[in-house]
Length: 307
Image (cartoon, rainbow, N blue to C red; front, side):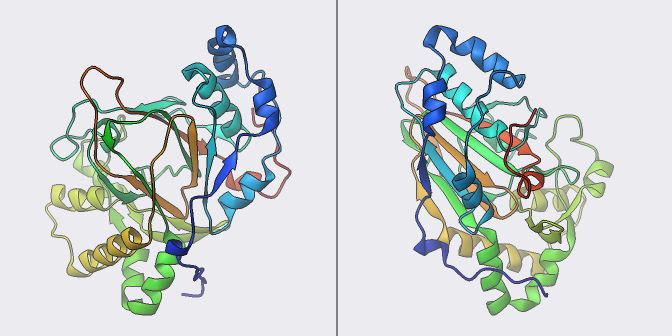
């Protein structure tokens, strides 16, 4: 219990918005070249170097996130290109679900199948990304290409600040957060088998040489216990109830619009969304998710373009 958590209230903060760097605007490929430029950028070619020092500082501070606003008039390919160029300044795009994963309602139900909630229109509880004990992305990013017809507001909260309040109000629950609990597996190549779930145990709270590591997915933890034939312990429910209520109370709530790029520090920030609806006959809500690896290793050296 020696680790100190920040005391700043998330409710007193606003969404951290920053403009698209001028160098990125100047390098924007023409519309008829954007698809080819995107392909090159995904392969690490033709990416301009950018000074993103202010953005990196926000990601590593208690702010923990940034929203960049690109022009809505840019084409989808131009927006994807700009998004990839920005993310590659901070690390490597993880390819587990493809470097860019379109978050679109596919008519699935995550409560009755192993479908990830990213393939549904349901509300998500506040959470960090990745249900795999062996993998935790440093940054989670979302690019908005199309808003839904209704709902779908984005939510963000600082888990370190929540843990500070937990320590003050319910210190007896912190050891529960530090215990490794099984988590259901939705990673395609690992899901399904009970033995895999048993070995996929993750503490909600831990530290490493870079600081706090907060990993929270209530639904998948409770479902894992159910699949293993174990009841959810009373003290774990108390911990989850406190966390959910505190983070929801202190969450930033905002609507992403076309061209917005959200980057969040997945080690200290939880994110979520409200349920949304698409309108028949119109383009469906589409956010493009990416996971970035290696950002914690890129803090000390100068920020350089990653291959």
